[in-house]
Amino acid sequence: MQAKPEDETTDLIVVGAGAAGLWCAARAAELGRGVLLLEKTPRTGTKVLASGGTRCNLTTTLGPEEAGRLFGPRGERFLKSSLRALGPREVRERFHALGVPTSEAPLEKVFPVSGRARDVRDALLAWAVAAGARIRTNAPVRAVERRSGGWCVRLEDGERIEGRSLVLSPGGKSVPRTGTTGDGYAWLSALDLELVPPVPALVPLTSPASWVRDLTGIALQEVEARLLGPDGRLLGRRSRPVVFTHSGVSGPGAMDLSESAARAGADTTLVLDLFPAAEREDLRALLIAASGAAGAPSVGRALARQGLSLPKRLVAAAGRQAGLDPGNPPARVLTRPTRHALVEALKGMHVPIDGTAGFDHAEVTAGGLALSALDPGSMRVRGREELFVIGELLDLQGPIGGLNFQAAFSTAEAAARACARRPVG
Image 1 (cartoon, rainbow, N blue to C red):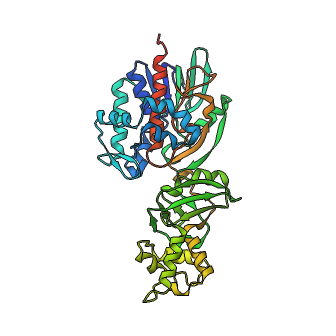
Image 2: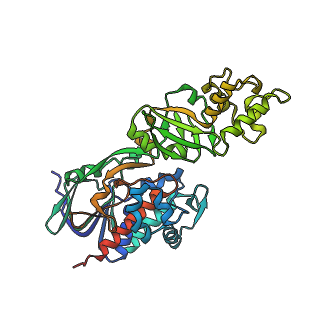
Image 3: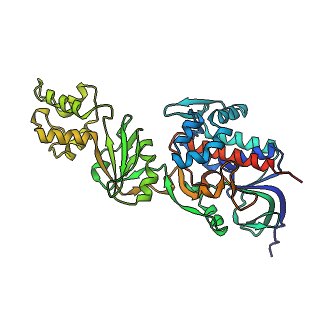
């Protein structure tokens, strides 16, 4: 018969050794708390290692206020104090001190100079260990329970670990192969805490239209994307690059809108303004002028001559949406109605969307513990003394560009400082 594991008592338990958990464990230990960090998988920071194409976009070049606004009004209010305590500049300074210099990239991104996500994870892990945090891997948690004077964590093998304080940072449901399988939602439900249903976010959109698949590989750097609900209502708008794929549309412009697409269900529409800097009247005038130009230029060539170049496949797709056959005819054959329809297609290409690529391909999870359940200055759960929730388990999601790592670090810092303010002894 296998011996029952011995129970353990500690000061502060942190569950989940991802970006938020590692930062919180390191800072709390640095500030004087005795910390035990539990991780269900064989290694720490698995999702950190996989992030950013293994490059790890660890924060943003934006300031705290600008970064906060990108989380929407509710998220901005919630993050205000934690971003003030630990903003993007402070995150970069900390990693520099840990031996990981950073560099800036387009779209306000910040990466380690080495281009290796492993350097980010290794730095966080080394910091936590040097600060005195104990780390146990292969320690999956089954449940968390309130105990007199503290909290109890029950592991899958039956072991019980009691602590005076508990920080939950197990992540959400995105990229479940890294260990983030949504375990924390059951724990929060058992504590009768309000949950916002989780959905995949920052994930490619899928389309049922075969013509969209014909555009696979086309990337547009300057485009405005709007997502419309089944009733035509505007669900969101982003001016960021998009990429057509074999299953739909990806890139920051589309992925930033994916939470809204996931919550709306099927039959949403992604509307792409292919020339956001050009006015409709300018496009009409351009096409009218091209209709009488020498050489009978095609629609695509006429646009390109004015610096409005598009791949031929995309021009043809816009033309077909306008009812033209073929989709890229000579400009001279356009009638007033077809010219109007073409301009509308170029300024608003309608891409049918039937869902997202799901949690397996999502960078983050939207939904989780309702923000109203926490004190935003400390990440302490209201009415649950010495219980803290941080990172992706919160109903807090920002766009692509290092914002979600920043939120993980900022909420972890707030929780660590709050834990350190509690007298030990």
